[in-house]
Image 1 (cartoon, helix red, strand yellow):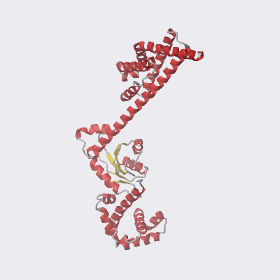
Image 2 (image 1 turned 45 degrees about the vertical axis):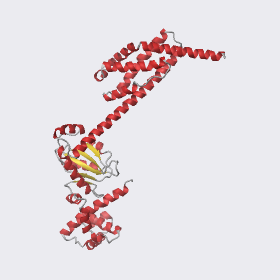
Image 3 (image 1 turned 60 degrees about the vertical axis):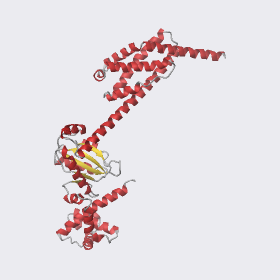
Image 4 (image 1 turned 90 degrees about the horizontal axis):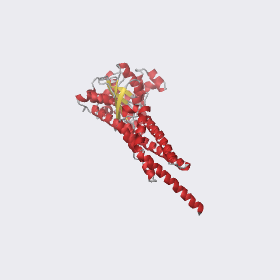
Length: 410
């Protein structure tokens, strides 16, 4: 009983000492604040250009009071001042490391004041250790809360910037950007005010998923700046080419190296106000993109552009030309069309087409004769070949779209 009473009296004495220490520190709040502000400005001159003395003083004073006022009432530190400090720092563009440096300066100042005050009041060594423990725990809690506030504000800024850029891209794509806003739009998108530009349209694998998730960074490495907008069916980019055709070739090569998406690219244009027209051309080129030619630049492949120019009509045209193939099993139909495509890619050479298909040239010739018989169109007739090529381009686009949809997750 006596031991317990002694322990209780000892704990009460320490608590009284801590309470008195906190009260004395609160009395020195103004003095501590001025010391911290002066040392921060002296050790880190960057603060002077980013934070006014009045703002820094108010923040430091709030922290000192928030740390010692609850301690004077035997409560935990009040962390409400830390979150806003972090958010304001991020909003003002102050690096997190600089804010952390300010906290370290404040800790040293406050700790020196605690030691000085504790000695003056004859505080016991155990109570001093408790005070140190409380101060360190408070600093850790303040720092954690401040860092969370800083990251939250930084995330909000990033989301806001992305939303603003997406809105500007949308206005460009829809042709709703006023002439007076062109320079502002270009600056917002980090694009030059004049071209050449191209619009890129890439088919997405599913709603909400990127077709080219790393393309902006990849093009940036090539010196090609771009801005992107994710739509329900396509991912659209506006890219600024630093030079003429050579840069367009590099862009197309980068798109080929991408994630396997089908991509249409508009022809180059110089005025951002023409972006909506360029988008229509990029979408037409996208309709012509298929597995054997995933990236199509409008104008570089006129047949694929024609095949994709009227998606509501062209499938009917293809069905009419290829009607004779409908009576065949799907595997035979696909085999004949793929052989025809390989023959076209081989510039009409049965030998080269056979090499690409890993079959004998005579096998290629036999399949082409079957195609002629089923469609009623001779490959020695230029008009018939033109019709078959057009139908093949349309059919290839349809088949690629169906295969892509089947491979996409539900």
